Length: 115
Length: 111
Image (cartoon, rainbow over all chains, first blue to last red; front, side):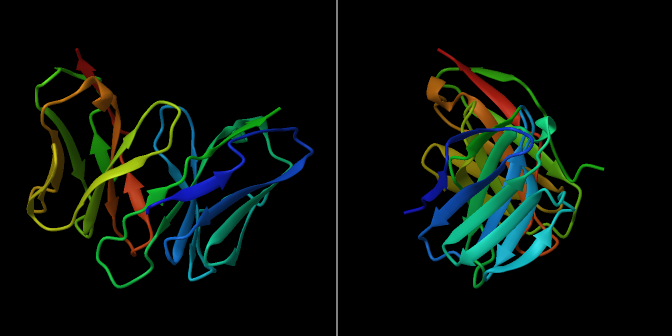
């Protein structure tokens, strides 16, 4: 089973709101990722958690705050977003070690609209 | 400078033909490569990965890797209209966690 789940599927929020995106995987993967994807562009890496520790932050603005409560869950807290942050937010997971390939499996994404 | 490059297409092939999708990369340290299929409005779906020189086959899909030429390709045999999507090539380098995506090639399979 290579399933990564994300909630909500769609989210509309105002620039003063606080909201959270959630991601869950039960594949025993130890690395989890947040990506942002704009239309007709490839996914753009935001954060990587490895063994529940933040290992990569791609200079993402502080209005995005990741959290990894345990090895199966990943959250992305949103606050004071801008309209240009509207995008598809993708969560992915991969095995953390012991293999050469580290293929990433994506969840279905959250379509975020900032008004 | 882009690290993974793909022709944006669209690449149009008739139904039943072989579709050939190509990708080049600039980082010689790249070790593993991935092909994702992405339908419009959906998330990327992993269809193949390869890390050794040569060919790797899975059903109608064959991935090819040539590290000397820094070239990766995906062949889709017996193309179907349902294969119409954007295909993203990605390479892993600079640590096991980070992959770099190409901009994707849009494939259209004409019935």
